Image 1 (tube, protein in one colour):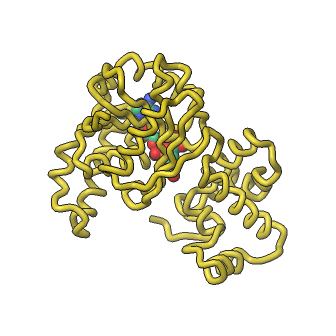
Image 2 (cartoon, helix red, strand yellow):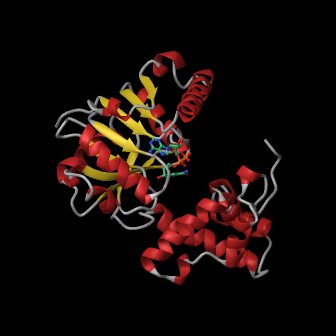
Image 3 (tube, protein in one colour):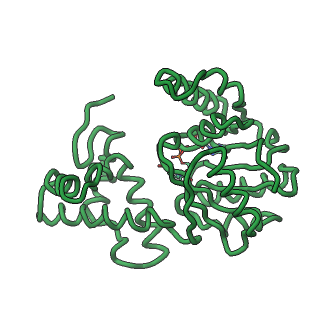
Length: 286
Ligand code: NAI
């Protein structure tokens, strides 16, 4: 089994920068591809900030040493020699399929793995636009990537056992994450369980059954959750929560996945949680 030493991350946003950071911290040669010069500058700054913070906290010896292993570019051709590419661009099916078509043309190694960090787009849709569907799978990280240990590995019906085994070796080896295996179904394991739980809490609050504070305190003090479901929804972002709920509902047509009206109204109003300063709670403007 060939070891993966050269990786690329496409999209250097919240998730892509985190994935690039853990790859470079693991000693891997890492290329980050962004869509514009401005976005590339933001990605580079995000990486620098996060790595300097990690160095200050003593988690790494030197930020510069890690940054030396990362190249941020807008030129997709730079991924030609990569052994693994993780796509982490916007959650848009046509943008992702267009990218997978290009990656299939550009990436030269016939054994290279083309992975997606998508939360809701079927892996099969990305696999079938390439000439190597057996080497396409989902590698789904959690935010913040440098902190959270979990990775969901999502083979499609066409992913080979070898691709799955090499991907597992990659995330559990150098990246020091813990992998769980999931079917290529909306929500995988974590969101398929977490989102209906959050939606139930929103319905409970919406019906006047209990206050937001009491719902959250109930779960924190009564079930040892680190934070309550409404505070968690504010952290994830209510727009993201609603979007994931919709993709689950679209896939399974189960009422438990249907976004409650209050969630839709809050998103319409721009009350998206922490990032806009108000959701189920209010937050200091940052
Ligand atoms: P984001 O909006 O922070 O980052 C996306 C980045 O992709 C942006 O910097 C954008 O400039 C770049 N981009 C867009 N089109 C591109 C292209 N064609 N080529 C290169 N770069 C391009 O989004 P975020 O939150 O990082 O999400 C990325 C992916 O990760 C999505 O598929 C999302 O579903 C998934 N995801 C998100 C999680 C989260 O908590 N935000 C958790 C797990 C997965």
